[in-house]
Structures are given as structure tokens and as C-alpha cells.
Length: 48
Length: 194
Image (cartoon, rainbow over all chains, first blue to last red; front, side, top):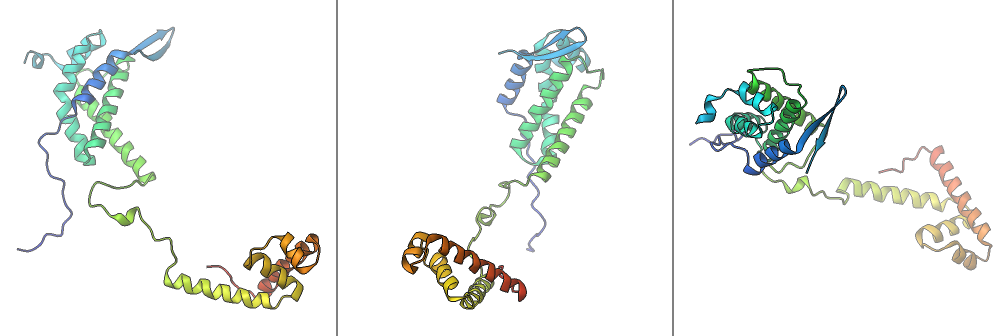
């Protein structure tokens, strides 16, 4: 059978989901982030 | 299942009112689409993970700062953020060539042969030969000092002891030797570089 010389195309992956750690990080980041309103200014604050 | 009934707009509103679980629902509802979209552009799981994370960090910040105003278009908005971050990634990557370990590994990408190739070796020998001939043309006292300093690696103190002149005289002879060499090289347009 003839060889194929085209570039390798990455295999389709069915399991395309972010890692659990990434999701956990985002949820924790969201909980930790608070926005402080001061007159017309807004400050971001990350609380541990 | 219950979550599917709640629209994105309502979830965003709940989130803005402090319901953190609404964000969790939004992420799990759209994570596969967004992640697949990023992966379809970068073809690298680690980079996809990074861009996915950055996308939602931007989403969270924008929502909490009260800058989100696209009611009912949550997914297209997040996709646009992801798209922009993918573009940023490629721009950054073009500027900063990186060690590519994604495909086939080439050892020559990290190793290089520092030794001279045959042609450069020949040129080097030729230059050294020319230089020796030029040195031979120098006055005897200057030639002696230069040979002792450069080829025999002697200190000026040793040269002064050996030749019976002061260190200052030896230094002066060395200086004139170099001046004369440069003069001859310039006059005859000799190229002594590899």
C-alpha cells in the first residue's frame, strides 16, 4: 500500500475536558476574589 | 438535570448576587465546548489547560467587576475571550521560539557541534601561518618579546629577567610590536578573521 506523506494530524480525542484541579482552582479563585468599591474606583482583592 | 433548566443569564445573575455554585454550573455546562475549541487550535493538552484557566480567570474578574453586559450571550462571550487568548498565545510563541517537544524529538535541536568544521579549520591554520610570517618581519627585540608573551605565555617580569631589560621596556616593545603588526596588516589589506 502506498505510503502517506502528509503531515500527521493529531488524533481526535473524545475525552476533551479540563482537569478537575483546573476547575477546583477556578472555583476557589472565584471565592477568594473580592472587588472592593471605593467611591468610583474598584479594587480587586484576593483573600486566602 | 435541574441546572439545565436554568438559563445562563439567570446563572450569571445569581453568581453576581453571590451564588458561587452558579459559576460551577456555568463551567460544567460549557467546559467541554470551550476546552475542545482551544484544543482544536493549539493541539497541546497543557497549553489548552492554561488557556482554559486564563479564560475563566478573565470571565470571573469581568463578572465581579460588573463589566459584563452581554445578557443571554454568555457562551459566545467566553468563546471570544478564549479565542483572543489563543491568538495571544501564538503571538507570544512567534516572538519567543521554544523547545518543541510535541512531535518527534530531535537531539540536534539541543546539541550543536562547537568544534570548527574542515573549512574553518583550514582557514584558522592559514591565518596562524600568515600571522607567524608577519611576526618574523618585526624587529628582533619586538619579535622576542611578542613570542615570549603570546606563544610561551611568559609574564613581563620573566621576559624582563630573560632579556635583561626593564619591565617597562619589555612592555614598550610589546606595544610597538602590536602597533607594527597592525600597520602591516592595514597596509597589505590582510584579513585575519575566520
